[in-house]
Amino acid sequence: SRQSLGSGFVPPPPKQDDYVDKFCRATNDAMKQLIVPPIRSYVEIKPAALEAEGQQLGPFEKLLTPPQSPGLSRPVWLVIAASVPTALGWYGYYKFSVEEELYEDELRREGRVTGCGGAGTLLPFVFATLGGGVAAILPPLCFTPLPGMLLKAGALWILLGQVNLYRRVNELWTEKYGGEAPLVCWWALLPPPLDVVVGLRQVHFLAKYWADVRGDTWEKDVVAEELFPFITSERF
Image 1 (cartoon, rainbow, N blue to C red):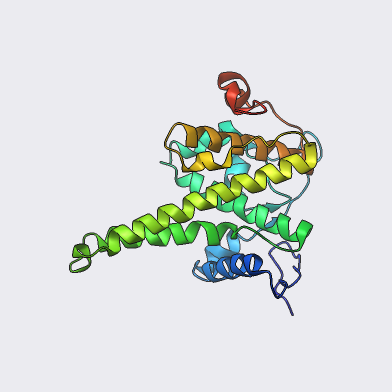
Image 2: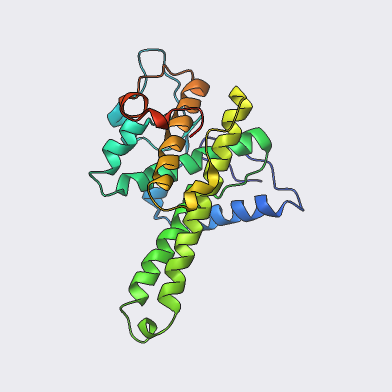
């Protein structure tokens, strides 16, 4: 029997010659096994309780809730407000959550995945970065190319993951609304501020998309829609 996701959805098996789907599923499944059981249970994707209008999740609840299906709308102001004081710690949880939500959504819609899910996207980067940092101070490893190789591999993995995330958000947006894709995917590979700009735009357009899918009322995002309107423009 095939393993069900936390939402209860049982995905179809990958096709024999679909190596992208096989790789993504295997990576996510393997990385999930490295998460300690209590945390793994908490962050397992849950079915969304689609609240009636006026009874949507509040900001504090959105910060702490596990990934949901359909995905949760997390506006730019909330992501910034939680990420800056935590030195981007909460952004790591955001990244995990949106990748998990897109992973299940893609399985439900397409029967296959082209992303590695939350654990499969985030943990290889974390392990490579930590491993490179530790190796850099431990002889004899510190005298070898290994620390630099690990750090570069981790950076490459997460950057390619960002490009892939933007590609999938573009696909969701254009399939639902038509028009031009809002994100320039390869900007993820550029230095600040361009990589930050496209990252903030991804947060906004994905939040808008999930709000519509869930039937949530869109609450105005002052940061994205008033203070920095380039975040919400159709194309930047």
